[in-house]
Length: 440
Image (cartoon, rainbow, N blue to C red; front, side, top):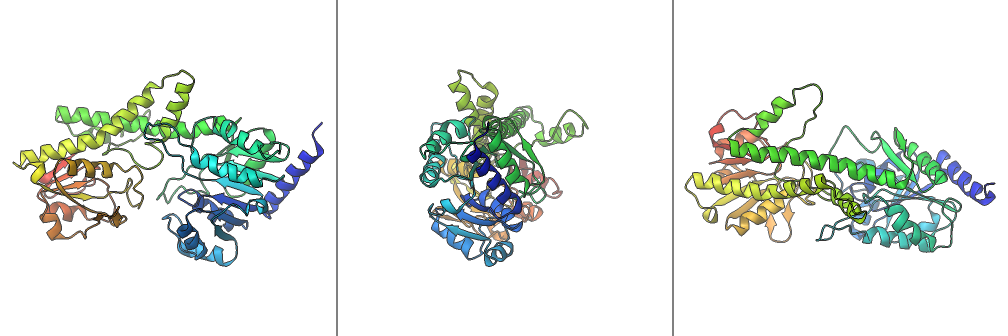
């Protein structure tokens, strides 16, 4: 027979979720957390963001967005109505009914999982945990994290999962800059540590997400996410390797791929580039690779894909050197203009951006490098984006397109450039001056 207190805690929490009187906490107000907080507030929940960066917390409370997918006007309206506020500590945990954790899960320099943020947040929650709360981890991680890392820490509270509180994993599926698929209309996978946790978590997400996809366990939910990004990493590596082969064969990889993708079945488009960036593709497959090794299983495709993708910035440097050499120029005496340093077009996010590796490699080769990126005004303390003018373009020996921001007039760039190395096929519609364009 089910414990009456467990039934009571679950039913009370479900009622709060369904009538939207539940107070929602979002830990980490970044690319995942802030858009999620906004969606919850839009349907009437009171949301408290726990953001340990005081500058970010202050901006949220002022109604000013620092995330491209969140409009300041929308945020300011919800803050003004008292539906969103940000704090920098965890003392508010007892007043929260649902806590969604959206903190970074980086890799160490040895490519092993670094869960210090997840562990730290879980300890803070455990100190303040009360009956009748849902905790959901959205941070991408290896299968087993929720049950094997979080659950033992939460158990130190003396409360019983599935009886006093509920624990789930629901991996984020945020695609920054994607106007078509948002937090609200992207299918949400949810797994619980038990059936009650699954019921509570699925009910919670159904209030704001169009379709919730329940799975049998937190491990299954965790594996879904790392597989999704591993799938992309492997296919990007495949087209990157094809590009390396086409370079040897003197063929245009973009022409080959565009023709291949006209087939209406059995294939889907992936395109090469100077490497992979962002938090997901360069990092998540290594979480799965690490977990597999723990089980004495070698994930050959994942390791090979990582190797190919990490090689691409070096190939870009090699192609830049070759392009300059063909013009009788040494890279060590050349001026190179990098167009774009963000990892993805029309974003201000430089996390794991291959453009930063290319910049470093060119500098190490002795080149004088400047960059222009309308979304990234500075890199560290020593580099700032330069205004893109005809004179600037003409003054450089090579213009290297590393990120294909849509606001740049590439025909104008080609018109004034001495030579262009295009790693993104951003110049595909440029007709004049194609003899000055070298594709990846």
